[in-house]
Image (cartoon, rainbow, N blue to C red):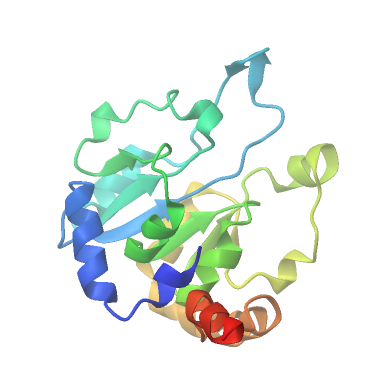
Length: 203
């Protein structure tokens, strides 16, 4: 599923995907992909979601340079109303192949979702927006490993997210070593296209 992240014609693929999704070619892309939270429901099959990012403020401060793609759980895909942010925020929660969204994104914002394991193959910035860290850790699912291993900063509020996005080169430099260590552990075979490797193995 990650072979597309290592395709030889990346730039061409990226242009084609942006055209398909009617996204501007001249803007950088933030992909926001939060995990599903078990406590976000009103009742059976009645789901809720409170977006913790202030899209109006993000558009005001980042809109000249960025657009943002939202990839939420399919349970709440129809809950989001982004009509107020047309041209800046796009709801792609129902888009089939998230790997194609990884490919066109310049930075990933996530939280406890596993999406960052795949995205790390691109060696692009990852921000961990964990505004409900204590609640999630103690009342919901806890974590599989120490968050200090994460290949990016853990951010607790909107201001920290905005500040980090405005200073991405500094963040990249700061986490360069940790990013490499993370990939060495979780993506050790990232240099080879798995389809090609499988074909060679089957000969």
